[in-house]
Image (cartoon, rainbow, N blue to C red; front, side):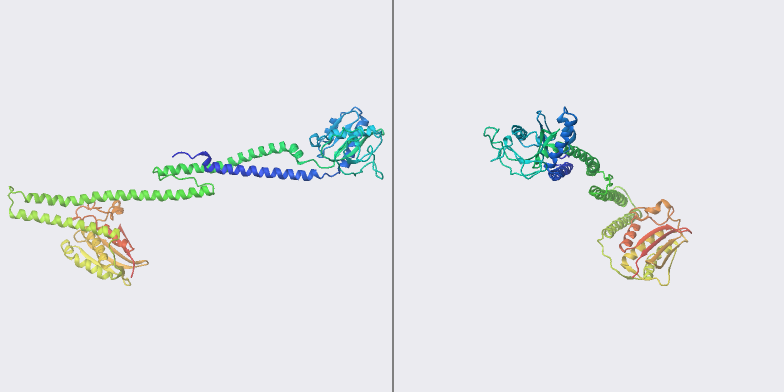
Length: 527
């Protein structure tokens, strides 16, 4: 049997489905994290104007202490964790931003133009902060001159103006459009009462693309690492044990298909695989018992054929021999010899007929082909018929037959003819093995489950090694009971007894009595 294609196997489908589910879960978590990040950082704790003023104060303090300070290093060290991007521009030409990629396009150029505009207007040295206006080249607004603080407002925290598109003005860029409008909050950098630069903060939060650029690589690598760890752990602790037990079950099924009914699958686990293994083991046990019973039945059939052939061959051989002798024309036989030979042929014929009749009778009983009548049968009537039938043999053998029926013994529920046949076979077997002057006793009494009938003789008993086999077909113990003057039967009598009693729902056992002799007990249902 060839192995399944890898992409159609159960293991691959489970693994790929689980990994896909895990990847979708990680993606959903990442998107949720980005959304939460945008929610958190998109609404900062301070306004852009406040952020611009704070950065301007810190940069001014640093420049006052260290005029030659590295602006980029300072901004990177102090404001790298601030999510809102801003730009710092100095007169000296230095520029620095905490997140250059988060600034709008041409943001630095427009801020530089604003600073140049203030320089050209002679306002660059004045102190003022927190101004907010739409960006225009040279810092001018439509319909107004160079940018001036709004009247009635303070230098810090002032916000106002409406975003418009940058257009050319005094000191402008020759009439070119500057791109999309975006409002900006400004704060001047004042050192020793002199403005040395500007801090510009976009009023709008940065787009989601900034968050993707900032957090994307970290999330991707973290997600890939988590996916690898989850896949490894799942393979080791989920799929590997199930795969191992399924492979064991597969090997056991193959062995069972090859005829080995003793194989068993591992039932550990407590999941669907173990349930399947338990079902398989029950099936294997049932098949093993059936195979054992079939083998025993086959052996019994072969033994029966051999026994039947042997039992039939003996009388047939005798009949053939004497008939051929009687048919020899050149062999002179007197009348007495001829009569004796014919008598032997007749005896063997009767024996052959008895064997065949017993075989047919046993086949009907064991196969259920013979229907039994259920009627009350008196035990006393059975005992009397046994005594009447065997009276001549008892007289010739000088054997005494007595019977005893206890008070309160109920009637037996069964077929009278078959019950008599069973009792006759046991009694005849006891008479055959009882020596001259011996005794055969029949007794009956009430039992908790019906009626108990006992047949006891005073013979030599049954050797212990033969007791388990006395009810088998064609089994004889005459060799162990040498000296019995009555000829041995076909070996089917006790087999027929067991079949009759079991058809009546009872049981029959054989043992040796403590005082000697064989003891047969029949347990039958009461009417």
